[in-house]
Length: 294
Image (cartoon, rainbow, N blue to C red; front, side, top):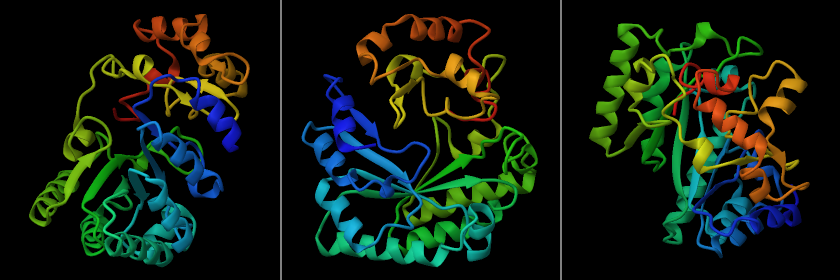
């Protein structure tokens, strides 16, 4: 997305509290990212994004500090080179930690309190045993927030149900998560889950017959793709069975074709919300809480 398109979108929102600058790609690939951050910060908006850390070199790191980024979320799914490469498909483990160490050192040298750096770990059967080691790595590198995310799967591609810990975790695996909670408490690290649950709760909580019903995203936020498509949330781009389903059920409008006000109050968004309140919501909502956490 160009800065011009970005500004066109942002200017349609008279009030914004928080903007997440990631979608299906790596934010640091966008050369206009620092300019986008500065534009948002000029309006007093809280800005964050998730990143794999591979491109966080000295120049880009300084640009993020200077732009005023509030939060940098590092995605890291293993405590060893081998596990990281197996999960992520790229041998970049050592490079990422060099980048993070240098970035945090640069912040300390400049007495820069922002961005806050947190670590986000996607827990699954094949890597949960490395969580204690990852907490140690985070602590050694000056990271004081660690988040556990459940694996998202659709029985297609690389992720599948057999890897998932949600409602499949053994007693030993749950005990390990509890030990990690204690580890973090002793080290002064905040340890949370993605969503409104603790790490342990996120793996075992019962969402009942309407697992989507606790979500407020249809009324509080929206998700806009680089092509301008407006979706209900960051879960909507995933798991559709066809391009037709994506276009007809997931896309609620396009911000380059009509205003966000018209889309937000339009018939497609209205129909989506009415279905959400019923027992037959959109498919990505009916799966929420089963494959996702909120």
